[in-house]
Length: 527
Image (cartoon, rainbow, N blue to C red; front, side, top):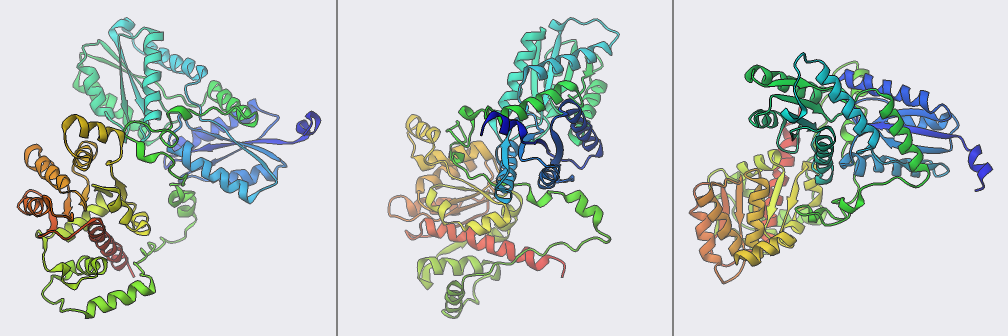
């Protein structure tokens, strides 16, 4: 394409926002879009939202194309590159590219730590300081920077980087970083810790683009701290808001996208390289996680009457699987077994091919019901080996939103195994204890040493996983560790006696509970 042809193409910018239930946040976002439109008059500028608000991003693209554009830059209206900018928004752009193959789509980088945004942060801090009648040196002031908080360490790390740059650039005596959610420390804990550092003044700066529920909570926490600690002056700086500097950075990101210079921090992206503690997420497929709430508020507003809750889909087995379970149900007398255990027990028969496999099973009181509740509430299964993880039914995990984690092959697990002189399976269980605390279902199907480590952590360190399933197979230490688990009264548990078991057995127990969970949800939905 020559220069004249390129210049003749009408270009557009779609500003992709997160969306909010808070009307203040929506109003400010749309005011910023108007500012972008005014400062980029040569472009068609539309906007859309990932969640809750309308129009959706797809509707914003359609409106842009209706204005005659043939080249569209989708620019994330978010500060940092976390899941929304790395997964959800790219998934939307990919869908648009499939729907409009003749259109030249480009995806821009988030705003990130642009020098203009550093200047804006400086401006907000100075404005906050000007609200006080007191004169306090910056050396006697602690900056409390509050980020959104994500599951992405790269994005969380950028908040700390901004804090350091502001601390050194503006001469603060100290800085404390906290988050509104997901990451720690949370706002209230961070403010308390900062107040104990001995500074005369705290300046609380929300690293947010717009007002909303979270910003209001940050300011409320700052007010509460000021009441509790009258000796410390607490100043509330404004979030970034509708400002020409923000609009200019958005326009710059759109220009970079079209020019092929949209720089993402791929060198520390947990989906591309092995980041300590997130190794298992390398190569994770780009899946959108926002579909259930896309355009939700418009849907709710358009409804003339409250919609009936969508019925949760019950588990539908494959015809051959259904026939197998008919044979299993008729193959022995199941009356002696508690009804709540039947799904799990019959799946163990299906997995082992042995009707007698269930005779030496042990369930602590209420173990199955507790396990089902834990799967629905905690939504995480910790396994000792990847074979257990692989044996879990993907469709059920996705339907219930349950995550799985196995650290047996991670680098840190290998290091822990070597330095502590324990097996990798035991080290993986210890890492799971450290990473997730009590909010897990533990499924052990291979390593007796994993059971021994779990019991040690339970007895000596107060670990209380929601349920421990221990069904390893083998002849070395298997009987002994299963008996150890059986006698571990502090936690609900499912195990057996003897040498039989294995990863498929442990996976079958979890699959049985997940089947009961989805069927219970389907049955309890209003008819």
